[in-house]
Image (cartoon, rainbow, N blue to C red; front, side, top):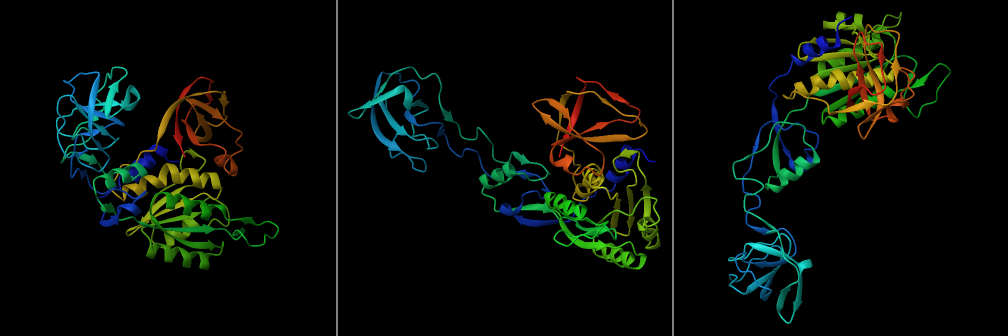
Length: 388
């Protein structure tokens, strides 16, 4: 069994400079930004009021000021502010010439065209031109584009962005006992959770994917579907049929199809039978059939390749937390990933019955890793939770 960290090193070694394409900013969520974005302007582009109030000159301290005009956001002042004068100004509006401070409206009273100060204003309440961003300054580096990144791109006036061309990823579920949701189940049959789950995980990466359906445990039919996936896709994901059973045809079939197997079997739980290989430009993962195994190996292994082919060294989002329960295990030759609930710095171990216990994933929000050789985690241990 290969150490999972060694396996990840192998997978990460296939990172490459991707082909790129232009994508509308409004459609770029979860795509991979392919190049640095530099600011095309200063932010803000002018001195602007940080709150509603009255624009005055900071050196002109008085108890009362004459209101000479009202300046709404999007308007410009018609004249400078002179001593003894102020402009009524709204949040976001451009400061008038001669004014460099806003007295917030809560600290004033307005009567007969005059603004009277009711308590001292300790702050300037002005956002200076270029305070947030200078023209030419680096704004974004290559990354998975998040909603806030789209906001930043839009704030620069950009309508398009250069993204990595996403790999096309094929999904095949194997097993004669598998049926699609909505079909009638016969005795001994189960519904296809893996195919739907993998497609959802791929959608969250912003990748294109192609679902090839269920391939039965019949060598001829399985071989046809695998050949189609190898020919059409950049990455092919198969779930089931990779272990040591009499009907686990996937490893032999992949070899027959010319796939070079880099590893088969990992010192990881769940996911021991995991296979990884390549034929030509198509990479292949053979994932275990149990649904938690499939989910975990995708998160821990497959994502590294998916994002590596789009040019970035992807890292999961993690946070340190303190375990709130003891944990013991008998077998320690494999690293183990456990579904947990992370809440306010606390890691709660939940009821979990193993790799077939799919609904445990929906009841949790993170994974913790128990390293090889570790047979016990005591309450209060600090671990890093990996969010899912």
